[in-house]
Length: 133
Image (cartoon, rainbow, N blue to C red; front, side):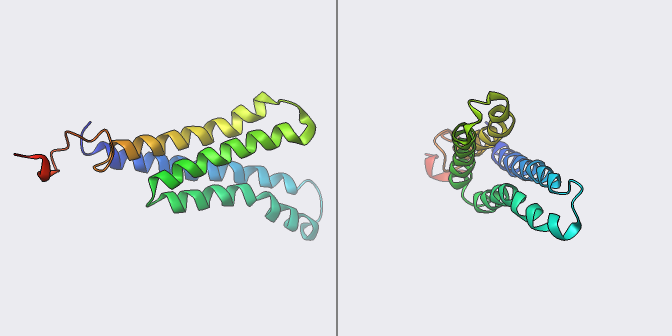
């Protein structure tokens, strides 16, 4: 892999994480279901919680790729478990729509970390002068 692929993968993972955060924020608009604005705003703020969690994981994963990977994988697992425990049964469609992209972003962070100069797949990095004899 070329040295330019790590920054590309990191930016793709970051942008995908922000995209998922915006996607989850769209679900918060459900709070405005005909209620007055004063009653809908607290519900709107509560429904923005998952989007804020995703944005926080992106912020931490900005520098620490492994934290981004663990954070998104943890969010995917937590959502899958919470859907199952809510008494709705195994709603695989819900889990696929939410947990699937979260796990995809976690895998992007893992790939970005493994390809980098300190990663295990970077044995032939031309920028690493210590390996030159």
